[in-house]
Image (cartoon, rainbow, N blue to C red):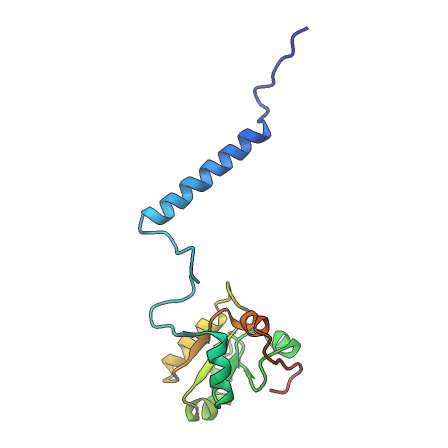
Length: 159
């Protein structure tokens, strides 16, 4: 007896070919259209944003720069850059700013960081600080860049 094929059933290799073709076409459109998003850089970086690498940030902090942690408070308490102050990116920006304004205005170097690639919090805080006349830079790759470099960390509520 002859075996009959079920035309409704897709073979795994066909599914894989369809997905691969769709992905390839999507990537081609993304790069060729001029309307796609960059795949090799952080999409949260906007014109005017300034970033520093972890080695430069460490040097600036050692020279007295003010580091701000834009992650939620629980993340700050779990581990942060020594001397960094919590400045979570949330709907209480004005409260955080008012509490730290004297320190922010007296410091020429402000570095903001968050949870790393894919985290926009540090960029948002840095832009809001700039709107209030405080120049701020963002630690590129944020907290993971600092810890991956093996730099010191502190836990708890104290800077």
